[in-house]
Amino acid sequence: MSPIEADLTESQQAELKASVLFNDDLAPVPASRRKWRVGSFAALWISMSACIPTYMLASSLIGGGMNWWQAVLTIFLGNLIVLVPMILNAHAGTKYGIPFPVYCRAAFGTLGANVPAILRALVACGWFGIQTWIGGDAIYKIGITIFGLHPAPATNWFGINGGQFVSFLFFWAINMWVIYRGIDTIRFLLNIKAPLLIALGLLLLWWAWRKAGGFGPMLSQPSAFDAGQPRAGQFWSYFFPALTGMVGFWATLSLNIPDFSRYAKSQRDQVIGQALGLPATMALYSFIGVAVTSATTIIFGKTLWNPVDVLTRFNSPGVLITAMISLCIATLATNIAANVVSPANDFAHLAPKKISFRVGGYITGVIGVLMMPWKLVADPSGYIFTWLIAYSALLGPIGGILIADYFVWRRRKLDLVALYQADGEYRFTNGFSFVALVALVVGALPSLPGFLVQIKAVKTESVPPFLADLYHYAWFIGFVVAFVVYLVGRTLTSRRRLA
Image 1 (cartoon, rainbow, N blue to C red):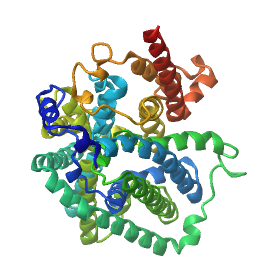
Image 2: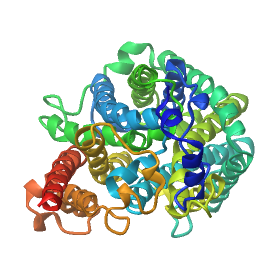
Image 3: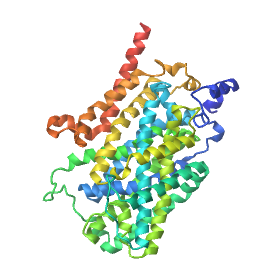
Image 4: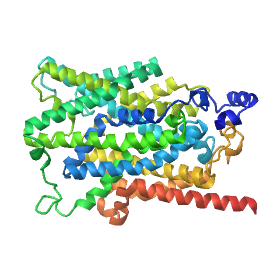
């Protein structure tokens, strides 16, 4: 019997619906609607992992100096690591049927839960913008290929030209239309997306194999860290920051996975489904990215880490247009599933009675434009060392706090009704848990000096090297520090109340 069906009487359900903390999108999912099995979760991760940012992630490691197996292994290890908090945080969603913002209330308070929810939502807005930029870039390059035009130089402070911006806004408008259409359109796109992008990736791999003269030359490019190479002896100083970036890639979903696991039939389904779907797909698609990027060095004499740039080298307009349309559809599906569903819930949590899922999706779209995503992916080092690692410094501590609270402090027991009560057990101090907020700040602080150095807000020589290097381990340090500080804080406040 489901905990929801067992614990909620008709009067309790009525009480929930009357609460200012409740709306239909944030409601616990009843057992009758929990139909996701192993295959559903595996398909979800195959669909979301087979995306252009995954390709670019792997390719960026090649651009940073790794050889093919070092890059694929780094990505695989990063995904094995992030799979652990992914499965742990999914437990509460499966057991109680609650989405991520409601899950946060137990640790952060009924109002304090907005802090991790909005931090996570803002990261999703950035990812939404990145995916939208990729789709818009594909449309732009289809246009200049069809009409035989030369790409115009950037003529404004945006850093892009007018045609690129118009294409970006056009693809953005398509995303907004899908949000308006609702969940059925999203589900349809997901069903056709994975085969499209995997097929496109395999075709690119075949083309690269043929052009580069087989896998031998393609994958024989030495690591820049090998003896006699430009960055000899610097492998480990690059590997650990890169590994942090790989963990950061899915650090968002490792938090808000309850948004999906709330539909799971059982804990076994979500655990096995995620374990089968995430690491293997990321490894496969990253290998495609690594292999094709390595081949571009041989074929064109330069490293092309963006697949859109690779596709523009094809001479056949028909092939190019077909590939770009497939890429746009696949990017659209990933964008909506991975970067709209969760932030829409997060924004709805700010005012459940006023902000619906649809309105939350529109908010996500607007912020995604304002973040100027083309600058986030302008180069490989910025993509990994500024974007991925920087937000992992915030999401790592949140993950540590949630897992410490749910598994250690509460031993997987939540009061489902109280999660929706403004004056219940999870109100803490005026709706805020100061223990959780302090743990979040303390967990993020060690990475701040290195972040300021990374974005050149302070001079490198003004920060001790030890402090600056902590930034490269942002997710790990933040997770551990926040985990410990939260449990110490909870223990001290509990003893004070007893005294």
